[in-house]
Length: 351
Ligand code: KG4
Ligand code: ZN
Image (cartoon, rainbow, N blue to C red):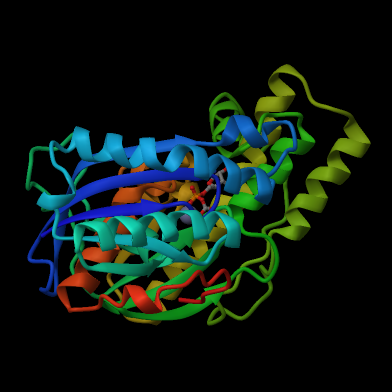
């Protein structure tokens, strides 16, 4: 099955064509024939965060060229795809509406089925996509169900037990900031560009992660509770800056490494505990923060120590993209879920 996926829930305008094998089966495998992402980072950079109205306007300007490019890079047109999928929530309502309206028009014009998917389901299923760098069809690294997913993005930090496709049980959430939000806010305090996660990741490489003992958040909670909290960590960084001033040189590397270590430690500790408590043998990381190099390395270390298998989507598939939406859409379209007349933006949609 060949699906065109559209994503406009926040500040990336993205479209991709994905070829999915065994889309109706228990273990579908996808391969992106194209994956076009236009990021609005420049539009929002000077505001230090996403401005919803500017996001909607930029999506309006970019969406059609992005879709055209996704189709042409995949060497196909609307007639040669089997269906479309679009993110219909959660996200910014104006931004979601741009993708939804375009998807509806394309589906209607080409008489193809269309399904709205949850952005978080897209992140969860990105791991079913073969790395584009790998040989076609070689997605043998896709995990076997059931697995535990740690979704860490700019808007969400949650643990889900994935028992089957479409069967997701939340085991824990952040009680305040999402992990990506904490990265971006601390980056802003340090005067780094938006979005700051990737800059902290880069600066942390030359730093000492044990230089500053930042708090881990909720560390005194019971071992069978899997929620997260990052607001105390953010305040601790602010306090440190007030006392020591803006760090330069090695001190900046050390601060970034220490802050990053605190987040990655809290995330991996709870993820591994939750997997063991739920009797799940496989851990999957997904969402933009799963592109973080230290998180990937620490998760590997801890999974190894506890006999868990770790699966990581390619970093490009962790941040927002159209391929993950096409992948999530394919298995729904294959089950006959196409009701474009009922499709509407659902900005607060919980998985
Ligand atoms: O999944 P995503 O692209 O968008 C949302 O659904 O939110 O995640 C974006 C978040 C941003 O907060 C960004 O700073 C963070 O992911 N991020 C990273 C890295 N790459 C992206 N955080 C830490 N290290 C990275 N390498
Ligand atoms: Zn996302």
